[in-house]
Length: 415
Length: 136
Image (cartoon, rainbow over all chains, first blue to last red; front, side, top):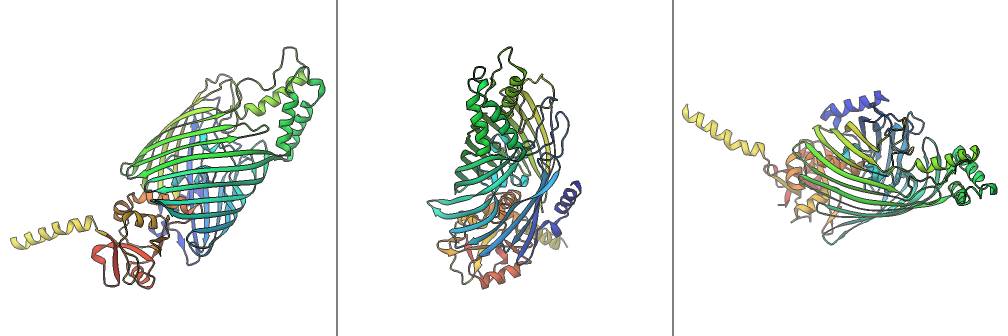
């Protein structure tokens, strides 16, 4: 994987001859990528994307943010156009894998209406659909405190886009629907129905956005079998005296196998004028079954000085899970019950990554089509005694004090 | 000899501002219905937000050697790097991209003369009878 990324960096650095995308009358080939390294400063906690397997703590990792994307545009700007985008990055098996993120055909009916069908990244939050393109952002990555509310990426379906002048600005409304699958290192999911809409209003330097998305999600494959087995064990009437809420939890575990719903809402705004850039966003997830409710907040301010863009952000996320175990184990409980309770509590604890983060860093556009970024994130987790998962897995040790710093350096490029 | 030196120096000093700071104008073909555009309207067209202005279609066009830095700074209000980041977001979400780029100003002028919706930007000193200024 390093070789293709190195080639892409070389292409981006090579100057005007190849810095401009290859463009023909009907086909344009372009791409983007990130070469990055990141490190937590605590041996007890690592950092990764929620769909990745590998995680390292207290040592530099190059496979978290590094990625390479290649895009083919057919007849861009024409009445009928097509796009194919393939992105290679570390995924759920721990190795680099190229997957198709965008593959759709768009019909531009007129200046106001566009329809596209095929595969597209789901625009749940403000930067959801462009978060793979590090070059388009000020910080290294879209704050996970927002992004983790909706860890899925894309859907196969259709989208209608309407745009019109409204007052002093322009309104764009996207309505979309489709299906998808999503894999983490431990669980495979299928989303049978994704529906949503996003309205974006821009006037001068201001952009405002509101969105709502609904997803029907179910676990599939071996992970579904494991979750069903837990549901069956929890339904055992013999547990009732020990565990008053086992029946309810049994239903939650069965629901994620049979299909459960999640609803996502986002509100955001950005300001981009001259030297100043600001981004404020709030998002929530209303979960069900074993998927908790969550919320995320992001406030970011940046100031451009020549080719440097220093920034500072505050972000936070909450979940409906707390430190108390969902299934309590009274003293003297049978070992089998303790093991079952451990499995149930582990599923919830793995999602309890409530936290706040202060990030400071800078982007440096030091060369044509290439930006260097460095940033330090100061994270404070709400719960320091539980085995977290997702973006912040506990990897070793039991002495975590709830505070961890994450340092990242990256080179983002387009070609 | 002194006079020649003085003239050379004067020419050099007179030429410096023009060299360091091109005066960018936005132009369309001489027969285009487009005209009297505001900075905000031009910015919307070149940033891919608007495809028409005042009911008339508007198509942004770029060319090799264009005064990109001056255009980005003075008309769009962004640095060229900011503008590239904006185009990257549009391009890699399948919703647009940078304006189509042709090989030279001559090519851009020819296209503007043929297609009344084409908008180009250029140094004021490069205007000719085939074009009309639509901003300022």
